[in-house]
Length: 204
Image 1 (tube, helix red, strand yellow):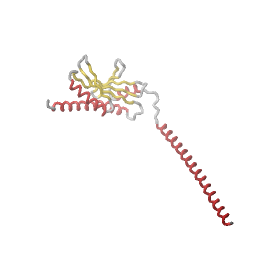
Image 2 (cartoon, rainbow, N blue to C red):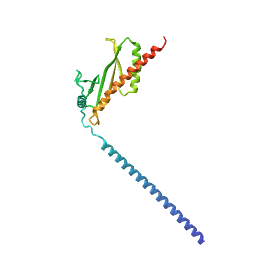
Image 3 (cartoon, rainbow, N blue to C red):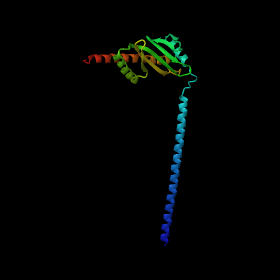
Image 4 (cartoon, helix red, strand yellow):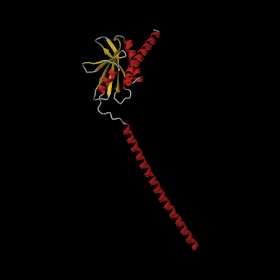
């Protein structure tokens, strides 16, 4: 009888210990989860503060003034048309810029660098094809327009890009932006010649 009571007591102590351990384990898991959540929140806050610290305040835009100053430093003479657009020459190309002190972006146009007679349907077909390829391959836009009164059609290109004083080498940056116009022009002219040569080799 005494042995039976002893076994009951031992079993009770073991069960009590198991229950206590489970409670402690549960508290330990909850504490760990709480610590992890707190650490995650601290890390996110630190990351947010670091990102804000790295951001350069742009202040009030002075894009047009900066664009004109940069053109002057590059040795480009400019004038204004009736729409107050900025007309200038660089590396033999004639460009038209649109810039405002209310915006961070500049738009530059390179007008009529390709011209053909409107009745040349074959060339118009080639131009459409090559323009589509150029717009996929490059970051500027190439378009064509029809001048029915003059009986011609033209190719133009334009590019929209950010222009702020925080750029490290703003003169070099603008030269790269303008240089892409010539890169695309050479590409279009080369592809047009290639298509024309291929068509000439096709037997009639």
